[in-house]
Amino acid sequence: MSLKKDEQKKILVKYDNREKVFKFRWTLYKNGGLVVFRSYDKVVAQNVLYSRHKNQSFRVELKPRGTDFYKVPYMLVKFKEFDQKSQEAKFEIFLSDDRGQIVLEDLKTLKEG
Image (cartoon, rainbow, N blue to C red; front, side, top):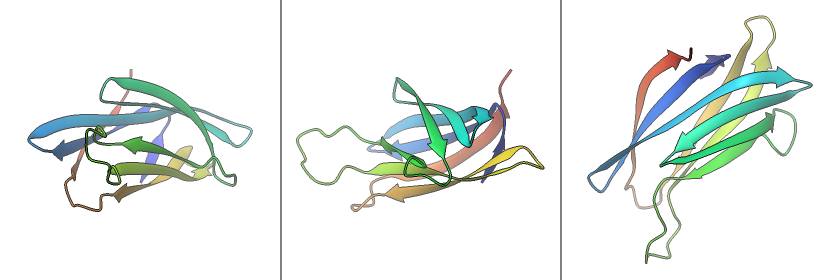
């Protein structure tokens, strides 16, 4: 998946009759670092990702831990590369959900502003 600057990606996360929206976008690419803003379940964060470095991804836990001490389902967003010509950042999204409780639905990608 590729995103241009300030283009927002939205993913609907469904589980246990609940629906939450995960959103992220990038705002700056400088010196090999990509500044990413993200929000999920009222938590807003910022990451700087590098395609050729150990900091190339971030993880978002999709369910509260609660009383279950099993492996919490999460989404991993990985920055693959930056295309200088098209000025787009390329990402991969992975889901880890051992119990098959999570449904992800791709919502329309929106341009901020």
